Length: 589
Image (cartoon, rainbow, N blue to C red; front, side):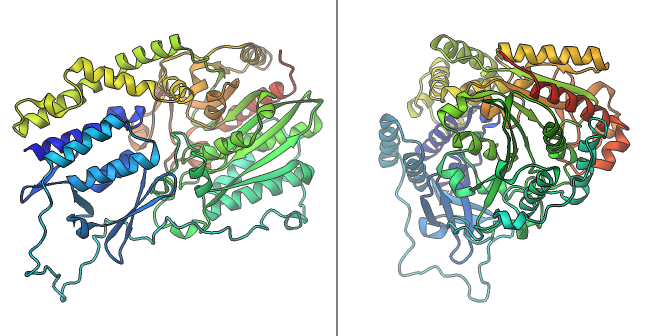
């Protein structure tokens, strides 16, 4: 029974290190007790710390890779565990060792907690029972042990691969420049709509780190050259999966290969598309202005494994049309268009781009304008603003807000842990836990919140809609432009400041203090047909009753969108093309 208590403490400890936004989904996984030995799934421990787990079928081993690249190889049977239905079960004692090891490698561990777990391991966990040496346990040679089909069987993905082709982006590969596909004599938005159709029909499933993503990047460069942009103003920033991990890039500070290869990112049966050297890239176009101060305009071109007209051929197309039109227009600021790669797996391209800038270059950014999923519906929306500066007072305010917001889940976690210990027959559960009451448990949560880096804490609370953005002078001027366009062109461009924290590449810039403008195009839940809503696998309220609709589904396809919302794409792209042009030709205080 005392061993089971160690399991409960272990799980409580694991939950304490889960990301804040995962708090609502924490749970006590199944605990198995066989012959008085308690077992826990190995993946629970590794995944809680965002380590990767792969399967090596040669010796039935789990390969755990920490964020710094350190590899732990675990032969399940050798540590007293077993595999059943694709799940690797290991003894709790071993799981505690792994947990401490991974914590030490990845993020350091509080000495008191280490000592506490060490004492529990020493005094409360029974030694594993060794098999009788006189009765060796061997598998039946006529029934070879094969990994369960649900266990990943791909080759060990942890070994780094050297870059395969370093000449992809040499100028001579792009010497044959074609004619521009479209004329700027077309009405605003039509060029972009044509690009959306082309990408949807010919460049779908642009999953991160794949050849199709590379094909899309090459096509973007070719289109920019065809418009008449100078080769010297175009650059390609390549980055590998391993570099991203070494730099700690990603929305939550890490990138997991299991995410990259998951069905909702890569798709099913598309492993052949993965580039062996795990490379993605940003395409960057710079149009010099009178000032070295710059406006960054961004859109990601990678996608889920669908045609992905909305997510995000639409934003990519808007940038392409803008880049062509700005060749003919005067503008004060230097304009930098960034077509981001690997957004769907954690904003990796945006992080890499921002990390590549010097402090002086970052200070020169006037604002970042982002375009993502701008044809999910006919409501044209933007959010403009910046994040508040973190102070001790704001930290205390945010912590109180989070505690109130998460109280339901805090109570659920607290009661679940006590219920588990009660079922195990523990008379004094608090003797086995690092807290003595609900109040102390809340203080533990409060302490964990305080350890989150301030930029990440601001970002998370903004994404949860718990703090308001700052409407700074630049954002106020952007809103004045939108209001004037609504009057002059009979547009209905809506300003919703909370969309500053919408989930896309601009979050990187928001987190580091820049003014951001985020474009989206959404629908209202109340006007959607019930039968259509029933087909959707991913939608939800984003602000009020505004909602995304077809992103991350097979319905995200040009011709379906045109059928569902006739003329909507042209209307949205016309308004946003003119809006973006007005921003890029403006002057801001």
